[in-house]
Length: 192
Image (cartoon, rainbow, N blue to C red; front, side, top):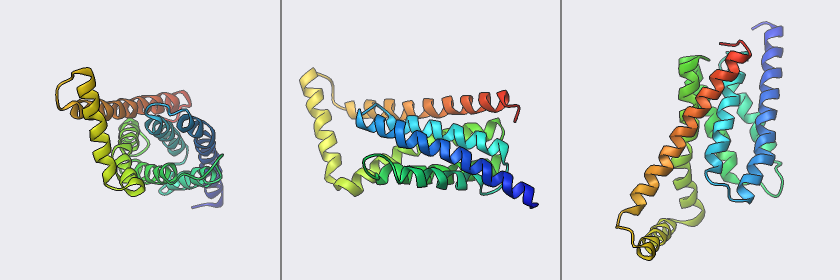
């Protein structure tokens, strides 16, 4: 790769990674502080858009991963404290985006797959991080809360399945929205 192209990759991965990292530092921290619903999925959708648009500028293997590493470095010095969950999420999203955009290219299909993968990453991420941080008993506590809600409001058994379905559907919708946003931004910038 010529030196000019290496400089271009370095500049774009740093700029887009810094943008993502600053969003994670401030908006992500605020979302978690106010307990914004689906905060992780919203942040993943924003990250997916940034990764897709960045890849449209630098369609080079490794660019998405480097963008994620820059964002991760900034998130690591975030306000308050470093939270392992969001930092791990950034790294996982960068790896998923790298795989999708390498396989499918910086085109519509690649953007939609990246958006869906990044947003759906939050579903297993939630269960794994909760299990790591709180132990397997946390899921019994969650089910106990849902059963108490079922009893209090007179709802039928199995409410947890409906809650889980709505939660996963919201992640899918955010993933699709991020795909549309990435396509729209890339078109506006005349990169696809």
